[in-house]
Length: 42
Image (cartoon, rainbow, N blue to C red; front, top):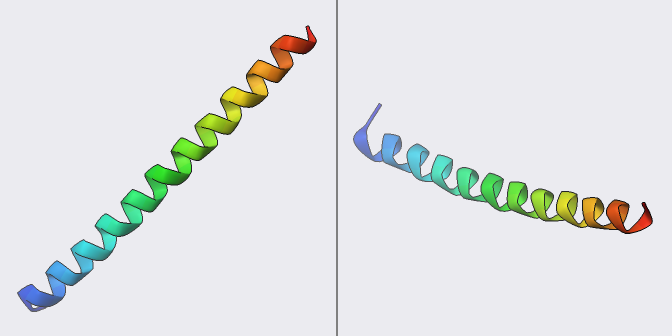
């Protein structure tokens, strides 16, 4: 495998990792909002 191809694949992984982190942060925010709503009900 050429060095260029390897770098391209690593760049793709980096992009996917950033997308995953963004989604996890959004999920954590939603979980926090749900928790706050549940605490208001109790």
